[in-house]
Structure formats: C-alpha cells, structure tokens
Amino acid sequence: MNDFSHPSENSSQMNSVDHSTEGLNFSTLGGSYTAKTMLKLASAEQHVCFNNGGPVQNGKAVGVSELVVNGATEHCSSPMAMSCEAPSPENKSRTHIESEYFAEMRTQCTKAINLSVDYLQGIAKHRVFPQVEPGYLRPLLPEEAPLEPEPWEQIFSDVDKLLMPGVTHWNHPHFHAYLAAANSYPALCADIISTSIGGIGFTWASSPVSTELEVVMLDWLAKLLKLPEFFLSHTEGGGVIQGTSSESTFVSLLAARNVALEKYLRLHPKSSKFEILEKLVGYHSDQAHASVERAGLLSLLRFRALPCNQKFELDGQTLRRAVEEDVANGLIPFYCAATLGTTATCSYDRLPEIGPICQEYDMWLHVDAAYAGSALICPEFHRLMPGLEYISSLAFNPHKWLLMNFDLSIVWLKNAQSFVKAFTVDASYLQHAKLGKMPDFRNWHIPFGRRFRSLKIWFVIRAYGVRGIQNYIRNHVKMAHYLEHLLVSDGRFEIVGEVTLGLVCFRIKNDNARTRTLYDRIEADGRLHLVPSYIQHPIELFLIRFAICYQFADEELTRTSFNVISELTTEIYQTDGPPHATGN
Image 1 (cartoon, rainbow, N blue to C red):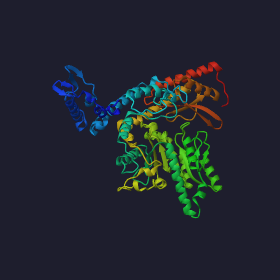
Image 2: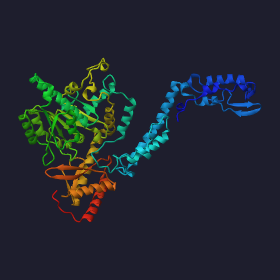
Image 3: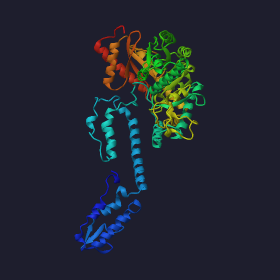
Image 4: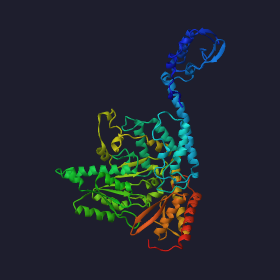
C-alpha cells in the first residue's frame, strides 16, 4: 500500500493532547522538560520533519520518540514520530511523490514483463481453448469497484487465478484457428514506449513524430511489398494506419461513394444526393470477409455478393455480367471489393480480369489483402497476386503475419485526396501553423485520436531485418505444405482449395457428417484449436481450417497436431465403420 493512500491524522491528534499532563516532568535522553515545553518541541519536530515536504532521515533527531517519564523510559506512541517516517500526501513535495510513483512503476512494470515472458514461454502447458461458460467471470468479481488501492501482489495473482481460465491462447504452439496473429517482443517493446509517450496524433502538431514516422514507415512497407509507386507519399497517393481491415474497407467504401456522387453531380447538376445514393451499387465475392458485407450494411448502400468460381475466386466474367445487368436497370456501379487471400480458403480474386472492368466503368477497386498481403514481402509470392496496378486502395494487416502485434492495419490509396475530402472537418482547435506541410491523419479515417503505432513497424523491421521476416513467413508456408503432405499421404482426407501460404483446408473425403464429427471431437479433446468453414459450390462442403500460427512452428509440432487429427479420425471410423461416400 502506498504511503499516500492513507492520509495521516497528525494535526487532529496534536490538537487533542490531554493538557492535564502539563505539570508532569518529562526527561528525554538529552535533558528534562515540562509538558508545555514538550508540546513546543513536538510542534517543532513536526515542522522539521515536514520541512521542504519530506521527512528527516532519522526519526530520533529531536529526541521525543523516546521519553523518560518520572524516571521510567517510555517509547512514545504519538503519531508525531511516525510522521517523520511516513508524511501525509498533502505534506509531501511533488518531487517526492514523483520519485515514489516512478520507483513503483519500475517495480510493477518489471513484474508485468516477467509475468508476460513466463506466460509466453510456458504457454504450452495451457489448454488452447478455455473450458468456461459465458458469464463465468461476473460471480468471481466484486459487484462494485474498490474505493481504496489494492496491493499489486493481489492484482497480479488475480490475473492468473481469475483471468487466465478464460483466455484463448492465441500464441499456443497448437493454436490453428482463424489466421496467424502476430506477436513479438520487439513489437511489445514498441507498444510500451509508444504508450508511455502517449501522444494522440490527430494532427501533425499534436505529435509530430507520430505523423513523420508513419509516413516513412508506410513508404518502407510499400517498397518492401513491391506495391505500385502511386501508393508512395511523394505522389498523390499514400498510406495511413487503421485499426483493422474492417475499418479500411468501410472508409474506402465511403470515399468511393463521395467520389461517385461528385462525378454524377457534375454530369447531372439538378439531381439530389439522395437520388444518386439510391442508384449506387457495389460488388464483392461471396467469399469476401464478413466485414465487407457489414460495410455495405453500415453505409446503407446496395452491395451485391457475387458467386465465386470452382476455385473460390471472383472472376471477370461474373463481375461483367452483374455490372451490365445493373447498368441496364438504371443503376450506377461505383465500387468493387476484391480479396487476395480469402478467409475461408485463402483464394485470390482475379484482379487482371476484374481491374479492366472497373476501369471501363470508372469503379473504385478496393483490395482486401489482410492476411496474404504480408507474403508480398517475399518475391516468390508475387505470382499469387497479379494485377495490383489496377487497384484504387489496398488494405493489409501487419498484425496478422509481419510479427507486429495487434492492432496495426494499413490502407494505401491511389488518390489520398478522396479520403481527405470525405473526412475533413476543420474546427478551430485543430488548426496549427504548419498546416498543409504534412498530412493530418485525422482526415484519413473515422477516429480523430490515434496511437503511435508506426513505432512497431520501425522496431520490428530493425530488430528482425527484412530477411528475418521473410524467413519467418517462408517457414510457415513450408509447414503448411508439410501438413498438406501428411494429410494427403494418410488417404482419408482431401484438401479443399489450393495450399499457397500458411492455411490448409481439409475434410474427410466425401463426408460432411464425419468432418463435422471430427471437428467437434478436436474441440472437445482440447489439444488443438481450429475453426471450420462452409462453402456452397456447387454443393455444401463442410471443411476444417488449419492455420500455421505459432512463431516457432516446426515439423515436430506440425506432426504432433496431425497425429491428434489422425487419432480422432480413427476413433470415428471405429465407432461408425469404414469410410463411405455420401456425395458431399
């Protein structure tokens, strides 16, 4: 408990001294005094102890902490002596309080770091997915917040006792759900420092270094990924850090809407914005991430999900058919969201076919490469994602696969002014003398406030080097192909889609029911954590997704995960009999 959490009551106790003792003789170790004299000394002691806001080094300096009363030695229980050791907060100097605060910060933050390292280093001992029910935590916590400070030992203890049982361990060696979620200690160090700096960089003036480093780091990344030059900051384009690709898709849709409104109003100045909005129509694949569909719902715009082909791709033929149909019906195609690396199977929409159609109809082409975009740092994976020269905006998440912790998503724009026009609000308190010389990123997305997230990019790239990050991604791809080999060699499984990066989709051959059973048993078993997916092309397929996520994945860990899958599949066959074709 901090000294200043319990104010001393010295003053009130001093004022309530029993004056009936004034006639007694008191002897200190250095002389004899009357009670009146002792009260004066006590007052002097209090003044000395609190001089300059801090206690004296030796509580016996004045000599009243030990008294001889009528010849007998007494240890004074008066709070005056205690005041020398623990002054009340109102009597501490600012420098003393600061010193105590930062000493405590160093102690507790060091403990938090050690606990974090111990957790990550020993994470394999945990069950990957927790065995708790919704609402488990409320009965374990008090109904009201504590009024007084609680000891740090108890706080850290409760993390382990109360919170850990409800944690899904995303950094576990056998966490294979969703897609990779990056985690590295260089990124953690950057988060600690950026949080300590604490600037809210909504304008250049509010935190110059936040804006300046972000511009440079996004140029670094655009060059590393070999993106078109029109995304670099010296052109009309540029990039900005968002929280997630969901935000990037939504804001690109809003910017595209405003561009379409402006173009149509130039041609039809008597039209109202509401009339135009009713005619706008956008497109996405039925394999696009759910956030793309939600962007349409939030915008209240017409947004069509188009069927993918047999390889789970949106192709040019399908898009052209939909566009021509809508134009014939008097609608205005204005936006297409393509995906490079779909969540379900890591498939790739055909940009070389889609791009020219978008140009022909003057449509904004947004690309969601949240996961697969990171692979562009390796030259050999560029073949998977041709057609980038056609796009208007591109979003990807370094927090998925570039060792940069959540949250860190980036969107690049071919024409940054389309964003600025859509989101600019110039309140007087947002103005500054250097306005216009550097971007004010508050005008590039929905939030005004923004954290110093570019520091993670700077730390991670410098700590690992480009080659270190490339080797990390290449190892994940290698492990995915190793798992693919194990599954195919087993003979009971089939691969759904093509294994290109770090995701393997599989199922028991021709058997949705048993694949569902296998998934249920994997989750009940607890040694692995995966998630399923459903695809309806041309019939429903139930499949299990296996993502390579662990930073230090190797063949031993991958084979261990496969052995669990194989063992549980064998149990199903022993219960249900030999495999049989079900037609799906």
